[in-house]
Length: 230
Length: 252
Image (cartoon, rainbow over all chains, first blue to last red; front, side, top):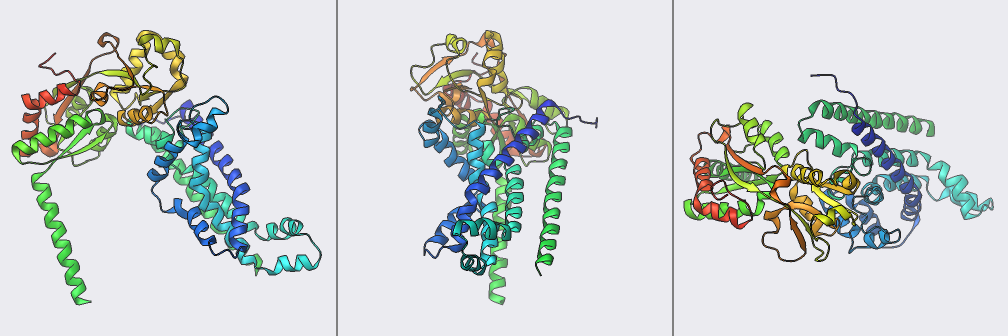
């Protein structure tokens, strides 16, 4: 087999994938934190129902999400209305559409670890902060967030990695546009289907190595954090 | 524990015998996505006539070919081009001398919007946001669409607006849902529709899409597979094929 070189197509797929995963992770940390905080502290009887909705993408086939997203992003759905604001007619086949899909798809992977970290912390630190006359906001920023840091780290890493590994949803709503929606997993699929196995091999091996490093690093970091917490 | 185990063993035996029976009688056929509707009707007519069942799997021609090369249990391959059946024979997956053209495909530019497509001018004006085609690398209908756009001289201008369906069925779905305003689909997919607007791309703008069938090595000994291929060549299947907007080697 000839030694495959990274084609410009491949390079653009890699860049696009990293961008998508980074933006998705940033958005998820931003909106996932208040959700996780609420899920960890609220005593509302229906909070587990909300937690279940957040967790649904864990078990739903990507085709279910892909189908609903395709309709929702399209011209007769809310996505089409949103796109109309800047003169578009659909959010399907756009990078923005992929971001929306990825945020929903990867949300449980970010919210769950952060919620766990908030819960593990217990009520005590916030109470102590309150007796020291810290405002709830101040206590949140300077007490809760630092204490929950391992949860944020795990959530961010898992959210990023899971978005990189997304395939079914992108295949259904992406339209395979180079530089816009053709992410790594779809590029690999394309290479396999067109029998360009040299390139497929290279990317697939890269993805496997990436996943290995991510999971191994996280396990090591978690162990170290657990030990330093003793 | 014991009754449970007996039940499990009984169930397993039942399932296995069922699978055995299915293996003996049914013919697994890989069908290019554009031929979906026609193939279903042909399989139904085939079953009515012979009592034998044909199990159809749909996908893009490239995708199906990859699966065949990896030992997929198909006995017949109905491709959307005449290159891959030849390749299948050359690489040892197909039975030599069994290839024949079962249909000649036509592409059509189609939109659900009744006022959108006037003809070639619509492509030249380019007054739309997204144009759907099938992936030209795996789907012959996508390759034909690219060829036609190049022939008209609009491909370079339209390229940024193109979205690719993974096969012609997904391409059709993109247009049907309105996510793309228009797209190049197979004439067979809209043969029964009257709504929307369309432009049948003149045959001189692209190489005719000769869709070839081939008997695969897995079906070499199967009487069902041979019977299906004979049926596909026959006048009843031919009438169905023409009804869906294809040309046939005999008819055109």
